[in-house]
Image (cartoon, one colour):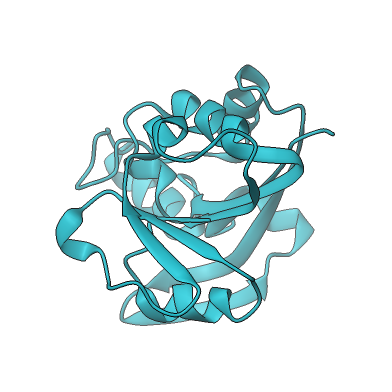
Length: 179
């Protein structure tokens, strides 16, 4: 399952490695047409169990969606409900204290949320607290990229050096549902 499945090229690439993909998209106007082994559904991450059967999903993926979701804890708990025992969820999100933001905020102060379309952004410790409150008991948080990743300027390392973990551009979260 891909949550936030409006990028049909990404979803089709994912589908090459799966028997079946369910694309969940909140905005009706962004839903692509079903394609081969991909079925698209209009739905809200916070209400997954209303339209996805319990314990039916092996793998769930979402890219840059959770920072838009009003109730992130409810979204994670809904994800837990629809994952099969042994299932895995992977999502990524911008790091609130990424290098460029940290430098800007030295001069402007902390960004106040909601900001633009983000309800919030996370630091690694914010995500740890959120996950601890959720039904998930096992997780990993991986820092991704370090440098300036602000279109049109892209100067960064794909792998974040351990010493700069706090300033990674993005945070990738792996959630595991115990069997």
